[in-house]
Image (cartoon, rainbow, N blue to C red; front, side, top):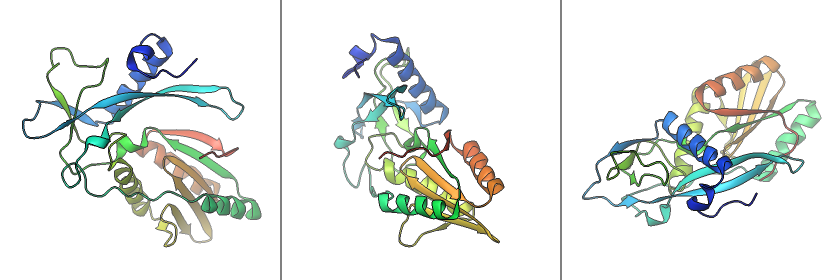
Length: 235
């Protein structure tokens, strides 16, 4: 099935309708926004649907994903956003982590943060239009005030990185001075290493209980997909 290029095309297929419903459910569960009156002194940012078919390693379909994206290109610097930079792990760092694990015969695991950017808190007052297909009945003239970031916002990557970085620091990890997406936690002779690649976490260590406890706490704090042992990694 081809990936639709518009909401109208997607609405004709049940798999994409369900994908959009799942996206809205995730956004609302995350308390990302609230209905508000249309402001008179603020621009309201538009939103659009993006559709993507995610594949497994063997090329089979894993899931149909609908992503609601803010039209961040209309944001004004200094008004709608300030800081936007967020570090991304270098592939050399991931290769080094894999090499260390192989040398020490440690298992490597992988997790994915569902809708990661929705977890980032924003400081700015931002309003977006209600999404196509999900306009609240009786509130058609209202807009959505964001409490947290939405994909497409210029500050969304930075907001997510700040949230996950604070989490690691509070959990006793130390951030690498040369690689801000690499975190290490040591307890006596035990070591846990985590590499963050946007919304993918690759982690390894020499203590299975330490690894298990980390995974369990992550899954309590964020909506996670436990991918188990790492079999392949793609950018």
